[in-house]
Amino acid sequence: MNIHFVGYLKTFVKQEFELLKKDHNVTAFDLVIHASSFWQIPKYFITTLLDWKNVRNSDVVWIWVADYPAIPFILLAKIFKKRVLVTISGFEVFAAPEIGYGNQLYPLRGAASKWILRNSTLTIAMSNAYKNIVISLEPAANVIVIHGWIDTSLCEEPLPEKSGVVTSVAKYKVVHLVKNIPLFIEATKGMEVKVIENVPHETLITELKSAKVYCQLSITDQFPLTLLEAMACGCIPVVSNSGGPPEIVGDVGFIVPYGDVVKTKEAIHSALISTPADIQASRDRARIFSIERRNFEVKKMLDDIMLK
Image (tube, rainbow, N blue to C red; front, top):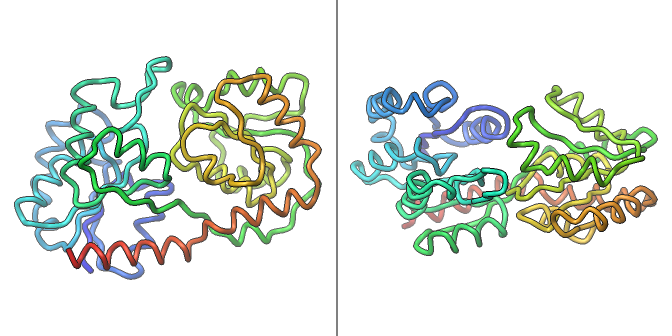
């Protein structure tokens, strides 16, 4: 199958691009280069139009964001009668006025995201929680769920003696607010804790293997892969009841009301006294979200969409 892949080719999205290349003829338009800032929009639209041949020659255009960079590609796909897949990142369909986060806070950008959802052949969410958000926001959207994945060989690697509580964030202030780092700091006063920030992936995994508890106390998250990696490293998860993390955790770990310091502190204390059996249960849960599962779901989706 010929696929034209549009996305910010870094971290997880780049991994998805590399996986597709193993089974399909894939061309790419890297938004890191062409759409790294809002002020590049005029130049971006011209560059996109010059990419028309890749759209014309594709069977499917797969866009990894439901924001303004998707618009010209959807228009080109309509001209050439191509199928369009859009994988949402999460911020496009969310609104959190208390921290100034999400496209749906802003009328024009929010409307653009809804138009994208409405005009794609298929929208892909990475959690059922976000599928429901998309449907609530744009009932005309055709939405499926393909969960995220990790290299589950991590679940088999040996672990050192574990202690302490960790969470992980990027350097940006808005990410600190989305991840609710102030609450994490408040709830873990007096404990052995660490906020892992802007480290190489190998260092992150080393930190996760050493920690006993991993917290994801976000106001929202679609499908946080670091949480899944933490579970693969034997961390007991403590997550807020918002977005996709409860789907990852399932019946292992602790799910707490978002923003509740007391219940979060209680859950962390309980997680710190978890047993080796609890640690193994966390690793077993992470093993569900394998690359093999992802490959099966993507193949089925692509086969189905070509029949429409």
